Image (cartoon, rainbow, N blue to C red; front, side, top):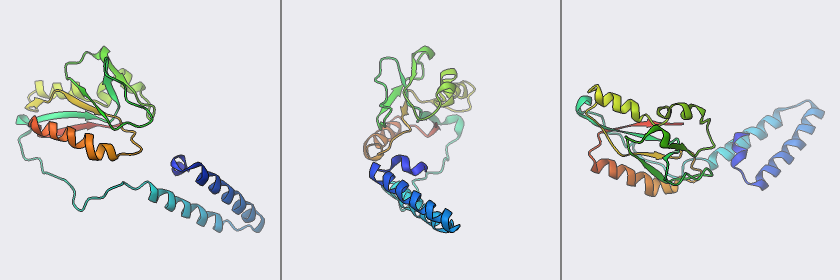
Length: 188
């Protein structure tokens, strides 16, 4: 059922019509196997449509070899955090990002997301954007430096092509240019 939310209206109508007919026959014949087969087939079909648009032959992994107490670390978020004065994220799906300076006052933080419960974030911004924890790690000399600004994305991106082709590489390049050694990601 979760996959039907992203299916076309035509597919949803076809699904329920076929399911209703099969269920009526199954009840009449006391044989639910065709219904199970039907549901499995639709699940396979719809999940295939949701596969990522690209695939990688190798995993882009680089072992972390620098001493953490000398490393520059950034905090990223997929929680659609933005600050007062910035445009909010489009809650229907948005692959843009917002710069978040680490010294932003708490009362300036905003959230534009309708696909997770934001009550916890309203109480503690660090639940999805751990910048204050990062600053504490820097103060305690556990990490060498906390990167500012940091970046926030929206985690709800039905079509991730813009993230994959534009904004993701742009933020990665900016972090690389700033000499960032690692990233902590706060997810929703």
